[in-house]
Amino acid sequence: MTVFYFIKTEKSDNINNVMESYKLPLRPANAEFTEKKSRFIAHITPVSSEEEALAFLRSIRDKHREATHNVYAYRIKHNNICRYSDDGEPSGTAGMPLLEAFSRQDIYDFCCVATRYFGGILLGAGGLVRAYARCGTIALDASGVGSMREITMCLTTLPYSLYENMKRLLKTCGADNIIEDFGAEVLLKFSIPSEELAALQNNVTELTAGKVQICVEGTRMTSCLIS
Image 1 (tube, rainbow, N blue to C red):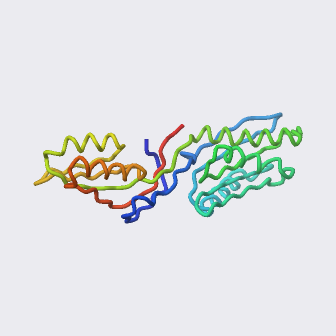
Image 2: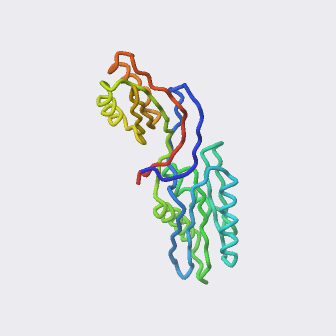
Image 3: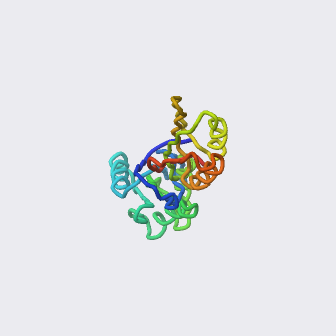
Protein backbone atom coordinates (compact mmCIF):
# COMPACT_ATOMS: atom_id res chain seq x y z
CA MET A 1 0.00 0.00 0.00
CA THR A 2 1.62 3.25 -1.15
CA VAL A 3 0.92 6.02 1.30
CA PHE A 4 2.97 9.20 1.01
CA TYR A 5 5.43 11.60 0.57
CA PHE A 6 8.91 12.55 -0.67
CA ILE A 7 8.97 11.93 -4.42
CA LYS A 8 12.05 12.34 -6.57
CA THR A 9 11.78 11.88 -10.31
CA GLU A 10 14.61 11.75 -12.79
CA LYS A 11 15.52 10.30 -16.14
CA SER A 12 17.80 7.31 -15.89
CA ASP A 13 19.03 4.55 -18.17
CA ASN A 14 21.24 2.91 -15.53
CA ILE A 15 19.22 -0.03 -14.24
CA ASN A 16 22.02 -1.10 -11.92
CA ASN A 17 22.14 2.18 -9.96
CA VAL A 18 19.26 1.43 -7.60
CA MET A 19 18.88 3.56 -4.48
CA GLU A 20 19.01 1.58 -1.24
CA SER A 21 15.69 0.99 0.52
CA TYR A 22 15.29 1.90 4.18
CA LYS A 23 12.68 2.06 6.96
CA LEU A 24 10.87 5.18 8.14
CA PRO A 25 7.65 6.18 9.97
CA LEU A 26 4.55 6.20 7.81
CA ARG A 27 2.55 9.15 9.05
CA PRO A 28 2.41 11.92 11.68
CA ALA A 29 1.13 10.56 14.99
CA ASN A 30 1.17 11.06 18.73
CA ALA A 31 0.65 8.94 21.83
CA GLU A 32 0.93 9.54 25.54
CA PHE A 33 1.16 7.94 28.96
CA THR A 34 1.53 8.98 32.59
CA GLU A 35 4.42 7.86 34.79
CA LYS A 36 4.34 8.83 38.49
CA LYS A 37 2.09 11.81 37.73
CA SER A 38 4.37 13.08 34.92
CA ARG A 39 2.55 13.29 31.61
CA PHE A 40 4.60 12.20 28.59
CA ILE A 41 3.38 13.00 25.06
CA ALA A 42 5.27 11.51 22.11
CA HIS A 43 4.95 13.31 18.77
CA ILE A 44 6.38 11.95 15.53
CA THR A 45 6.39 12.93 11.87
CA PRO A 46 8.21 11.76 8.72
CA VAL A 47 10.77 14.28 7.45
CA SER A 48 13.13 14.38 4.48
CA SER A 49 15.41 17.24 5.58
CA GLU A 50 16.81 18.86 8.70
CA GLU A 51 14.75 21.97 7.92
CA GLU A 52 11.55 19.91 8.11
CA ALA A 53 12.69 18.35 11.40
CA LEU A 54 13.42 21.73 12.98
CA ALA A 55 10.12 23.15 11.76
CA PHE A 56 8.28 20.26 13.40
CA LEU A 57 10.25 20.77 16.62
CA ARG A 58 9.32 24.47 16.66
CA SER A 59 5.64 23.64 16.15
CA ILE A 60 5.63 21.26 19.14
CA ARG A 61 7.49 23.75 21.33
CA ASP A 62 4.96 26.43 20.41
CA LYS A 63 2.05 24.13 21.18
CA HIS A 64 3.52 22.96 24.51
CA ARG A 65 5.15 26.13 25.82
CA GLU A 66 4.15 25.28 29.38
CA ALA A 67 5.78 21.84 29.28
CA THR A 68 8.75 21.15 31.54
CA HIS A 69 10.74 19.53 28.73
CA ASN A 70 10.48 19.01 24.98
CA VAL A 71 13.11 16.35 24.36
CA TYR A 72 13.76 15.53 20.71
CA ALA A 73 15.59 13.25 18.31
CA TYR A 74 15.74 13.15 14.54
CA ARG A 75 17.62 11.11 11.97
CA ILE A 76 17.70 11.78 8.23
CA LYS A 77 19.00 9.39 5.59
CA HIS A 78 20.25 12.05 3.19
CA ASN A 79 23.69 13.21 4.42
CA ASN A 80 23.25 10.86 7.42
CA ILE A 81 22.07 13.61 9.81
CA CYS A 82 21.38 12.64 13.42
CA ARG A 83 20.58 15.02 16.30
CA TYR A 84 19.07 14.78 19.77
CA SER A 85 18.65 16.87 22.91
CA ASP A 86 17.93 16.21 26.60
CA ASP A 87 16.29 19.67 26.84
CA GLY A 88 17.18 20.15 30.49
CA GLU A 89 16.81 16.57 31.68
CA PRO A 90 19.97 15.02 33.23
CA SER A 91 22.57 14.31 30.55
CA GLY A 92 22.08 11.01 28.77
CA THR A 93 18.66 10.25 30.27
CA ALA A 94 16.35 11.60 27.57
CA GLY A 95 17.50 12.43 24.04
CA MET A 96 19.73 9.39 23.56
CA PRO A 97 17.18 6.84 24.87
CA LEU A 98 14.58 8.45 22.60
CA LEU A 99 16.90 8.18 19.60
CA GLU A 100 17.88 4.60 20.39
CA ALA A 101 14.23 3.50 20.23
CA PHE A 102 14.51 4.25 16.50
CA SER A 103 18.13 3.39 15.77
CA ARG A 104 17.64 -0.13 17.18
CA GLN A 105 15.17 -0.70 14.35
CA ASP A 106 17.30 1.24 11.84
CA ILE A 107 14.61 3.89 11.26
CA TYR A 108 15.43 7.05 9.28
CA ASP A 109 13.61 10.20 8.12
CA PHE A 110 11.83 10.95 11.38
CA CYS A 111 11.57 13.67 13.98
CA CYS A 112 10.23 12.66 17.38
CA VAL A 113 9.55 15.10 20.22
CA ALA A 114 8.82 13.80 23.72
CA THR A 115 6.96 16.40 25.76
CA ARG A 116 6.99 16.06 29.55
CA TYR A 117 4.78 17.83 32.04
CA PHE A 118 6.43 17.22 35.42
CA GLY A 119 4.09 15.72 37.99
CA GLY A 120 6.09 16.45 41.12
CA ILE A 121 7.71 13.04 41.61
CA LEU A 122 11.31 12.48 40.52
CA LEU A 123 11.77 9.43 38.29
CA GLY A 124 15.51 9.00 38.75
CA ALA A 125 17.99 8.41 35.95
CA GLY A 126 16.80 4.89 35.22
CA GLY A 127 13.15 5.93 35.27
CA LEU A 128 13.82 8.77 32.84
CA VAL A 129 15.71 6.51 30.44
CA ARG A 130 12.83 4.03 30.42
CA ALA A 131 10.21 6.74 30.03
CA TYR A 132 11.87 8.43 27.06
CA ALA A 133 12.64 5.12 25.39
CA ARG A 134 8.94 4.30 25.80
CA CYS A 135 8.07 7.59 24.12
CA GLY A 136 9.99 6.53 21.02
CA THR A 137 8.40 3.10 21.02
CA ILE A 138 4.79 4.27 21.33
CA ALA A 139 5.32 7.05 18.78
CA LEU A 140 6.57 4.55 16.21
CA ASP A 141 3.76 2.13 17.03
CA ALA A 142 1.23 4.91 16.45
CA SER A 143 2.83 5.97 13.18
CA GLY A 144 3.53 2.57 11.70
CA VAL A 145 6.69 1.56 9.88
CA GLY A 146 7.18 1.83 6.14
CA SER A 147 9.89 1.03 3.63
CA MET A 148 11.16 3.79 1.39
CA ARG A 149 12.09 2.19 -1.91
CA GLU A 150 12.88 3.26 -5.44
CA ILE A 151 10.22 2.72 -8.11
CA THR A 152 10.94 2.88 -11.85
CA MET A 153 8.31 4.16 -14.30
CA CYS A 154 8.40 2.29 -17.62
CA LEU A 155 6.63 1.98 -20.92
CA THR A 156 6.65 -0.53 -23.76
CA THR A 157 4.79 -1.27 -26.99
CA LEU A 158 4.06 -4.79 -28.20
CA PRO A 159 1.87 -6.69 -30.64
CA TYR A 160 -1.49 -7.99 -29.48
CA SER A 161 -0.22 -11.57 -29.72
CA LEU A 162 2.11 -10.93 -26.77
CA TYR A 163 -0.31 -8.92 -24.63
CA GLU A 164 -1.61 -11.66 -22.30
CA ASN A 165 1.85 -13.12 -21.71
CA MET A 166 3.23 -9.66 -20.96
CA LYS A 167 0.43 -8.94 -18.46
CA ARG A 168 1.24 -12.16 -16.60
CA LEU A 169 4.93 -11.32 -16.59
CA LEU A 170 4.33 -7.81 -15.22
CA LYS A 171 2.18 -9.22 -12.43
CA THR A 172 4.88 -11.73 -11.51
CA CYS A 173 7.49 -8.96 -11.30
CA GLY A 174 5.36 -6.75 -9.04
CA ALA A 175 4.40 -4.11 -11.61
CA ASP A 176 1.75 -1.60 -10.50
CA ASN A 177 -0.23 1.37 -11.84
CA ILE A 178 -0.55 -0.28 -15.25
CA ILE A 179 -2.05 1.95 -17.96
CA GLU A 180 -3.07 0.36 -21.27
CA ASP A 181 -3.62 2.01 -24.65
CA PHE A 182 -4.89 -0.13 -27.54
CA GLY A 183 -3.96 1.19 -30.98
CA ALA A 184 -2.10 -0.41 -33.85
CA GLU A 185 -0.10 -2.05 -31.03
CA VAL A 186 -0.58 -2.22 -27.28
CA LEU A 187 1.08 0.54 -25.27
CA LEU A 188 1.72 -0.32 -21.60
CA LYS A 189 2.82 2.15 -18.96
CA PHE A 190 3.62 0.83 -15.49
CA SER A 191 5.79 1.19 -12.40
CA ILE A 192 7.96 -1.52 -10.89
CA PRO A 193 10.35 -1.82 -7.93
CA SER A 194 13.71 -0.79 -9.36
CA GLU A 195 15.44 -3.90 -8.06
CA GLU A 196 13.10 -5.99 -10.26
CA LEU A 197 13.78 -4.06 -13.47
CA ALA A 198 16.80 -6.00 -14.70
CA ALA A 199 15.02 -9.33 -14.25
CA LEU A 200 11.95 -7.98 -16.05
CA GLN A 201 14.02 -6.80 -19.01
CA ASN A 202 15.73 -10.17 -19.27
CA ASN A 203 12.39 -12.00 -19.13
CA VAL A 204 10.84 -9.70 -21.75
CA THR A 205 13.81 -10.26 -24.06
CA GLU A 206 13.42 -14.03 -23.68
CA LEU A 207 9.63 -13.95 -24.05
CA THR A 208 9.68 -11.82 -27.21
CA ALA A 209 12.97 -12.98 -28.74
CA GLY A 210 14.30 -9.45 -28.37
CA LYS A 211 11.44 -7.83 -30.29
CA VAL A 212 10.09 -5.83 -27.31
CA GLN A 213 12.08 -3.39 -25.21
CA ILE A 214 11.29 -1.76 -21.87
CA CYS A 215 11.84 2.02 -21.90
CA VAL A 216 12.61 3.75 -18.61
CA GLU A 217 10.86 7.09 -18.09
CA GLY A 218 12.23 7.92 -14.64
CA THR A 219 12.34 6.94 -10.98
CA ARG A 220 10.73 8.01 -7.75
CA MET A 221 11.07 7.17 -4.07
CA THR A 222 7.90 6.05 -2.36
CA SER A 223 6.94 4.70 1.06
CA CYS A 224 5.10 1.41 1.44
CA LEU A 225 3.57 -0.16 4.53
CA ILE A 226 5.56 -2.98 6.10
CA SER A 227 4.19 -3.10 9.66
